[in-house]
Amino acid sequence: MLPSPVDRPWRFLLALAILPAFLSPGCSRGRPNTPPADRAGADAPHADTPERHEFARLCMGVETRIILYANDRAQAVARAAMAFERINELDHALSDYRLDSTLSRVNAAAGAEPVAVDDDLFDALRTSMHLAALSNGAFDPTIGPLVQVWRVQRRTGQPAPAGEQRSALALVNWRDLDLNAQTRTAFLRRKGMRLDLGGIGKGIAAQEAVRTLTAMGSPRCMVSLAGDIAAGLPPPDQPRGWRIEVRSGAEAPPIGTLWLAQMSVSTSGDSEQFIELDGVRLGHIIDPRSGRTSAPGAFAVVVSSRGDHADALATTLLLTPADQRESLLLALADGHKDDTSRAGAIIEEPSPDSPSHRGRSTIDPFGVLRWAP
Ligand code: ADP
Ligand code: MG
Image (cartoon, rainbow, N blue to C red):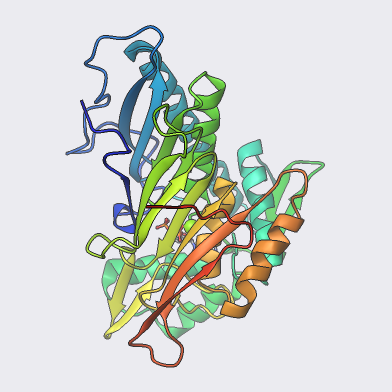
């Protein structure tokens, strides 16, 4: 029997994000060292005491874990399969690695014609546009061309010619994405533009998987895709929630442990996804307005009532001046009166006065960060 999450806090590491998001087609069991699909199922079922079950697969290019409570193994396996299937469906809508995704079809028609999109892509793009507007373009779903240049640099180990970087930057602008709610179409106005939802897709997937498990009768659950975690109701033996240990990297000392229940938490930073060119560290969080990457070593942890906001905000806050971060969280809550968005964040970054020192700040206007002893 595995220790419960109470004994062994759920380790929440940026370091888990070891593969690029959206790399693999769908969820698979084929990864070496992946734990057996069901690690708690060996015990005999107890009809009225829900048992803890844990599953792990590779989805959207990262290790994806589900913990759920169910009455017996067969029930748990069936429910987890539905949740993985939901993640797979989102991957087919949102992935820029899959040539057959709805998103890739929009990219292929850039500068030519609007493309009819499924609800998953439409909703993700609508949320992304809202975040882009509120963040003065710090979050941008059309970041694709700059990400492509970054990936080429990672592959070749060589800096891209300045001209390539400039042309990519000129193609990034969320205002040139037309989303039509009547026709449910998306249109990138200029040839060469490219959508990339790597900064929001895993948060959406974790949240949707929790929704699926809840709808199927397992509301006490938690789903993680690398550094993006969504929690349902708390485990039966821990009414305060799931314990989430926060670190900035695999080797870094823990910052603390958070309680999480019916909330999501995401991290962003360059501790895993970075390249070094001519001694300069370039992370995968890119400012769409300048093409520059986020400050080396900076990382953000965001807790939010919405998985999509947690994920996208963790990326966005690293590109937002310190004195505008709280107003961004407040503006986001204001725009979602019916569908409340409450978020708080911890940000660690080199201090502006002396870059060799790191400063840590907490922004928590709604009191959503609950530290465990
Ligand atoms: P991870 O995918 O490792 O969890 P993030 O959630 O921070 O990390 O997302 C980083 C990804 O988001 C990048 O790989 C890229 O696809 C995309 N991205 C980078 N910069 C931006 C930006 N300014 N706005 C929107 N998406 C971005
Ligand atoms: Mg993110």
